[in-house]
Amino acid sequence: MKEKTYVEDINRSIYDFRNEDKDNFKIAAGLTPELVSQISKEKNDPTWMQNFRLQALQIYNQMEVPPWGPSIEGLDMDDIVTYVRPNTNMKTKWSDVPEEIKDTFEKLGIPQAERKSLAGVGAQYDSELVYHNVRDEVSQMGVVYTDLESAMHGEFADMIQKHFMKLVKPKDHKFAALHGAVWSGGSFVYVPKGVHLDIPLQSYFRLNAKGAGQFEHTLIIVDEGADLHFIEGCSAPKYNVANLHAGCVELYVGKNARLRYSTIENWSKNMYNLNTKRAVVEEGGRIEWVSGSFGSHVSYLYPMSILKGRGARMEFTGITFAGEGQNLDTGSKVVHAAPDTSSVISTKSISKAGGISTFRNAVVVSEKANNSKSSVSCESLMLDDISRSDTLPAMDIRCANADVGHEARIGRISDDAVFYLMNRGISEEDARAMIVSGFADNVSKELPLEYAVEMNNLIQLEMKGSIG
Image (cartoon, rainbow, N blue to C red):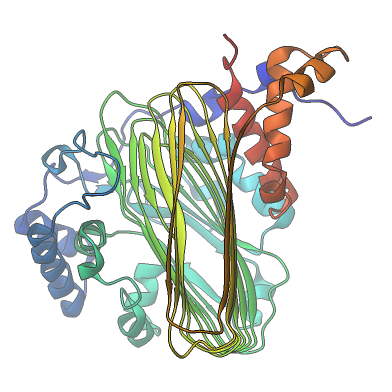
């Protein structure tokens, strides 16, 4: 018989625990040219990257915070530590990772996940990767999976310089410029032409330091006819001061290639999550986004896809859960820049205890995008009368024969459904949690089993105390 999981069985401590600071080096708080240059020196940046960082800082200082999103008044960059080096360099054997760091990832299930179902794993702790390993058979296929900095200093240096922050430019918005100035860590993946990787790669990012920021950069290139599933996980312990996450993801999907990018973000509720993700898809290529956004005090997260080649396709499936003290502003944007392109966006949001969930969707169809199709569906579930859910669609259609549709629905948990389950011996809290898990089912079905279980557990955690 399948074992049941009830709300009271789920323990938040597996995410909220933290280690005492044992960092090797921590830069002073603040954001100045001197501090940015110090990061460059610590990381032994090539000259072009040193200059890039300082130029990005100049752009950051010239730009304003977007006026339309949630307030980030509680975030003061003068108080944020932008670089924390852990007390170890990167290891390729799990047994060589320091015990306190290893214990963190053991509790989060990273080694178990690797043993069961992953082709390669990267684990970042604060500002640097502490562990990275790829199965031999994957490397023999020509797949490159390494930390971004090693790639930048090695045989892929020219490829990194050609692609780094070309999709997401520092001038795009203030947080992109911030990322360009202080980025550290992250992953580089290259899948050669025609290579189909049947099992996923994963990177996991853990921010442990109090009052710090994490600014990893993920760069993935899937060449013509290749196929990849990449999984990203994020978490942090809870502190009584602000922490910041401003990562960046750039995805290049080649002709007739496919990339699935799955994310489960489980930030603590003192976190400002100001993340930027973008993909460009060539002719016949396909990008699939699967996103679960939990935790954080404020989130700005809008993955964007540019359908550049004829017949390029995009699918986005996402869910957010906004609880007490949370304002999650998320969404998706797609640009149809070629004929016969298609996009499907399906999102769900859950709000409780005064949480605010906002979904912003933008569909742009250019004059050249004949016979393009886009379907957008947004569903919101509010668990009480003090929460809020908004859907803000934006359509820019410049082609007469494009087929674009948008649907939005807002609902509440049915008392009849709760009553039905309670009559079968289930508590009211567990009944509501079961209904919410069912609401999120279309997202969990898109994830590998162990990650679907984690997402369901996070929903159960968020549902604790939702009665009364």
